[in-house]
Amino acid sequence: EAIINALKHSNGSQVQIMIEQNDHWEISITDNGKGMRPYVNNGIGGNGLSNMKNRADEAGWTINWKKSQLGGTSVVVSPTTN
Image 1 (cartoon, rainbow, N blue to C red):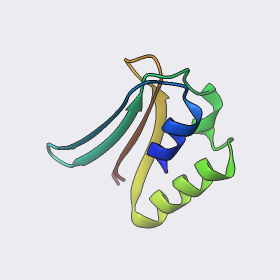
Image 2: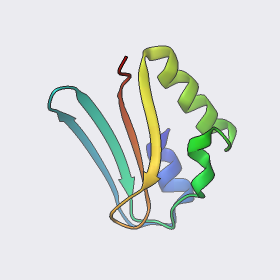
Image 3: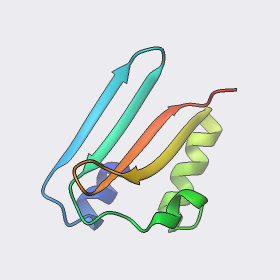
Image 4: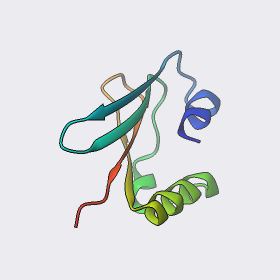
């Protein structure tokens, strides 16, 4: 869903998908588009964002949206730490 959102809403020209494993897995989807409003990380956003957060929570993962170094949005999914 993060890839579809980047393609559909970012108005960017690039989407980067990275899967990394250091001490844990981390998946990031980053675009170079217009970015997102800052309040989405507080649980206020469209149904798609809420659904993504709920699915991540159910699977024991954490999902965060933040400004990317490319100027757009980066969605980062990682294991929940206790």
